[in-house]
Amino acid sequence: MAEQNAPEYPPALELEKELTRKERQIEYLQPELRRYHNLMEELKQGMRPIGTIEDVKGDTALVRLSGGQAFQVSIPPELRDRVGTSVDAVLSPTKGVIVDVIERMKDRSLLEYQVEKAPKVFYEDIIGLRKELHSLRQAIEWILDPGTRSRREQIIRDPRMLEEAGSVLLFGPPGTGKTYMAKAVAGTISNRGQNTSFLKIESYEIVSKWLGESAKNVKEIFKLARESAPTVLFIDEADAIGRARMEATTDAGRDVQGMLNQILTELGEGFHVNRNVAVIFATNYPSVIDSALLDRMKRIIYVPPPKTREEVKRLLDSYLAKVEVDPAVSTYNGGLTEESFDEIWKVIRSRRQIYEASIPDRGIAVRDQYVITPRDMKNVIQEAASEASFAGEPFVSMERLLTLFRSLSSEERPSRLVS
Ligand SMILES: Nc1ncnc2c1ncn2[C@@H]1O[C@H](COP(=O)(O)OP(=O)(O)OP(=O)(O)O)[C@@H](O)[C@H]1O
Ligand SMILES: [Mg+2]
Image (cartoon, rainbow, N blue to C red; front, side, top):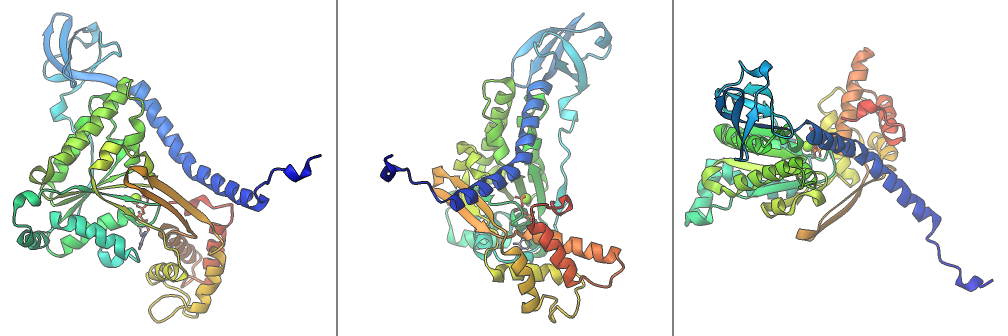
């Protein structure tokens, strides 16, 4: 036996750690994956060509699709009295027959989006993230705030130099404050007297079940953003745009490509058209974002989770200050005493969360290890407060906090803690 040539195995412990890490990542990606599968299925099965009826002659009609091609199609008897040039037609997949009629495109609102006027979140509400917030503010405040813009115009005298509105990409693990920061921009600028709207879009919602309408949805969203300007247009889950585009050979794939092109066009319109609209994209998976879209990002900002004991304590104290806490463990400003926090810290510091992301085109690679996100902390405090009130107790006790943090740290995470 040539024992001296035995292969060198990595220490079992390292392997095991790696395994746990991968398992966590899978767990974290599963729901995401299911959602995309569903979306793709819907796209493939449910997408139906839709077009404008331009002419009706007997039992045939001339229907023009949003892509521009026109088809001579037949009208089934049961639809005959509903088909006319004032409605739109839904065609069979082979585009030979009208299968349904729907309201005229221009009369139909494709999407129902909520524009939030002057949201009640401000820069002071954001704990940590100084550098990140600074970078975000520098990139977009001038687009929204006339005061900031006029200062900018005093320095940049040639208006052509001003036209680089550009958008921002925020990325990072879930629950670290990406949406919160974007909202705080709109809230803070509103507070200064410039009423600013916050319009949030989930990327996968833009994809329409009507072929050719995904691009229209994009147009409509930007139009809405301009109409409610100044607006922070927040496009969440931006990776969905890149992912869905992969099947570019199918009708559905082409539709998504059309949607992406429309986004690129809208972003390219620049300062004159999208005056007062600041576009912020966000994602947990920046590596999947389409490279053409990435090119439009003026700034890419990593939004990290808190990492030190001090950062975690500041966040926790800020949430605890908003609820009643046992006076025996809290300080005058509503936070926890150092000794009490130590008990909690002992419980959560053994959690091992890993976030990995890369954007090779921009030379960005992040690998971060942390114990807890702001969202998790907020959820625990909210849960503790509602349990305490339900139990008829006057405040949140230390035992309650410890129990909840323990269950957060154990494998069996109660589902109610996941927001
Ligand atoms: N830095 C922070 N300071 C204070 N509170 C925060 C911070 N980050 C997150 N929170 C709290 O956690 C909640 C969730 O944060 P947010 O929705 O911004 O996460 P996110 O980064 O957008 O996550 P996702 O990637 O899942 O969309 C916020 O409503 C806010 O209350
Ligand atoms: Mg978010």
